[in-house]
Image 1 (cartoon, rainbow, N blue to C red):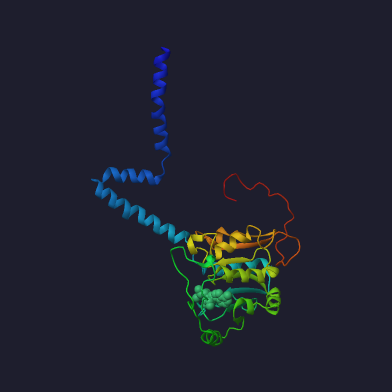
Image 2 (cartoon, rainbow, N blue to C red):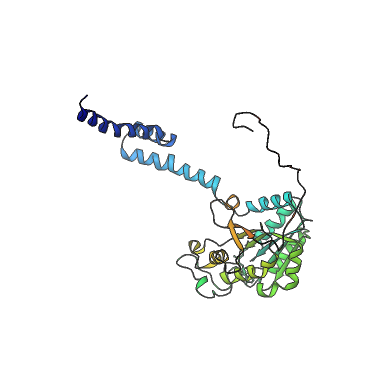
Length: 305
Ligand SMILES: C[S@@+](CC[C@H](N)C(=O)[O-])C[C@H]1O[C@@H](n2cnc3c(N)ncnc32)[C@H](O)[C@@H]1O
């Protein structure tokens, strides 16, 4: 064949080949949509079908399966620590208000049969929020904090816990700077914290909590920040500012908060505390099945184990 003709055929067949490959590579979703588009008449019906029969159920499924629900992690954390480590443990909630989450934490320990292993501590002034203190607490257009918001009732919460016959709880009434005393910190050191639930909204309050707890936090302790997404999670404000500062060395070179994707799913709210030094508090491992470190023998060639 003449060289120029061969060149032309080659050039012309290239887009055809890549178009075919693209078609072959298309996902089942795209193929299904093409078929629907072919079968449905008119742009309006095609668009209606896409929005209501494809896009909406896809979003719903994604939300149902992958979105974060804060109470779910309670059970995961309790089960995980109980399986791996020896107690006693503690769960610490900073910002309790009327005890909506606190009641769920206590019940989780009861449901899992861990009331003797886990003490749940509630910390709150029961005065509601203070006035925002400085730029780190200012809303950039969304939800605003205000003085007195979320004022809880200590007596009602206390009575609720008594009525339910819980014995594994403590309610610490007062501002964190006053209630996180050396004695309380020493008590927490004995009941290794496994979950620190930060729901006090403000950067300043969360910072006090972290500074006071730091000496007694073991690596692996779970931190949940209820209001991480304040101002879209900007590192200039709120709990996100604290996480940013911790991870940029403000509280020490060898500590960090690592996002726990399994617990936090589609949110940025849940982290594992890491202390990269040999000294410091640690959980005591439970003895587990002895593994000598031998490689596994051949089982079969399939992907199944
Ligand atoms: C959003 S509410 C907590 C909601 C609660 N976790 C629930 O499940 O309903 C925030 C609480 O943090 C408390 N708080 C904020 N800063 C505080 C501080 N420095 N000391 C004590 N309490 C504080 C407020 O009194 C308020 O009750």
